Amino acid sequence: MILRTLASLVLLALLGLNALLPSQPATERGPENRVRQDVETALVLGESLPPFELRDLEGRPFTRDDLAGQRVLLTFERSIDWCPFTKARLVGLRDAFAGTPDLRIVWVMSDAQIDARARIFVAELGLADRILFLADPKSSLIRELGLLKADPELIEVGVPHPTTLLLDRKGSIRFLDVRENFHYWLDPRALADGLAHIE
Image (cartoon, rainbow, N blue to C red; front, side, top):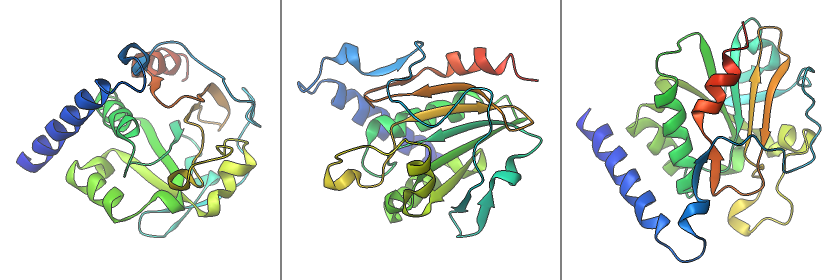
């Protein structure tokens, strides 16, 4: 417990320092309530995801059918190794939906972005207790959905544009947010509003 608290404090301190960097105004960083669709994708509200097979952190297969009958918060994200904004969003989602046990939170990343440091971060904060982490082999689902970041820097190979979906129990997409700029992310309160309309 002490280790988790310490890791959370270090993360918050790093985010505070990052907000002071001159590369972008601090007002353009952090959560926002505005829902975005900055990038054209293959995702359509009211439709289901195509069949897929991803892998959990132990290498076990996970398919679309494994989501059936559940309300699902599904995110496609960058890296929890080197991106402090993604780390902040991850911790924020866990905390915001701690009291919503019937919501399945699924976090998808390119398999190229899941390394030892990412696994340590997940373990130190106990994130896997609430969130299911999945690897997308060769970013195949990310590509199929039109989420792949074009012209990535070397460190970003295989990463998607940050994307958030809410799926109903039938697997239909009921909420969609796709962002080009990862410096600001969807406030969990906006997701809570969307979730309130899903049985």
